[in-house]
Image (cartoon, rainbow, N blue to C red):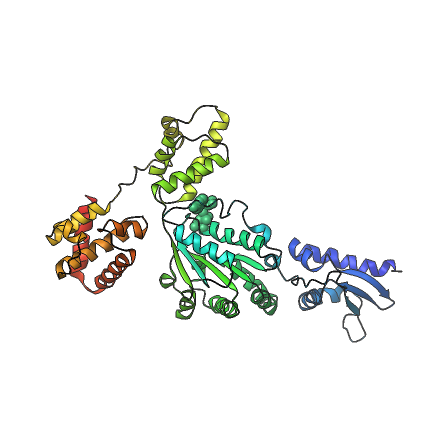
Length: 442
Ligand code: ADP
Ligand code: MG
């Protein structure tokens, strides 16, 4: 039987510690410890596992010494026993901090592959993401997704998470933002528990890291991240990374950049009008909002570079139509979304505009640019037009390239690269390009 006294010291200690640490920490480290026996001069605690024992001794020993029985030489008079496992299954250890809680619940339930609308701007990235989810560690590794704000990067990362969870049940998967990774590392450094953290990360099957751009200018963290990353890749564990920019544009060490380019780097572009309309319609129908094609086009023509804003528009319309049961007409929508739509619709620059402007400056014909001639002047004009088209038109490369008399997207990319490099040193060419741009925009 336990004496009141020994139960008391333990609960006193718990009360004390509960006030000093977060709920999650308390739950992780103390909630599952049981006092199973008491001796005159000490007590026996049952620990859920060895990690908890190590962790609390590493981190709370001083506090424990204040409350709990001690031996003559001043050490804790505690006998630790490890709880016997009921299941044979090896559970991943309970590890420090919120970060090590089971992660599955954190995937946004709406961010699935099924809810992801495809179009030329994102088809490639989506199929790469799906490929990775179907065969983690066996297709592209790492998969690096980059693109502007609100274009679906996080959505795809979570979709991979859901898929892996469902189809590879035994896989351990961790999804983390770069900021959370850094915070985690800091608190583990403080708690001297970095080894545990490392062990945790390096034992994952799938690691998903969002917003890697926040690792820029964080030298120490970068190194730790890079090590974790390499260790996973070497074991064929899947790594998926998202960022606002491609690896080569990030201010990170050449080593990490090279690693991130090992697998597949995929770009998520701004969706074209039809895709934006499809997204609007899907969001509307998911909340039972009646949205005519006409109105969907009206909105999609005016909100064009951020899907989150499209969602904001739908939510606002939904809130309104719940209050006032009226059909959503264009006029009504214009009034309701005034601020959101306050800018004039984007003036759409077409490949034809660019071709005309380039042809004028180089004094050649549009048909020559679209043709196959390799005459230097014509070839240069063609590359300049390709460069401008890729820079100025938010459409898939394939689609743009096809407007160049049916060229392939690799030809387009080649032209773009050539000019991108050349304007770094050739100021005449740069000036010519500025003039062409002005002519297009005028
Ligand atoms: P990012 O991480 O690139 O900033 P998010 O993944 O957070 O963007 O996407 C912003 C919002 O747009 C999310 O609510 C997401 O579900 C939605 N979204 C993005 N792309 C699509 C798509 N192709 N189909 C449907 N919804 C999308
Ligand atoms: Mg995001």
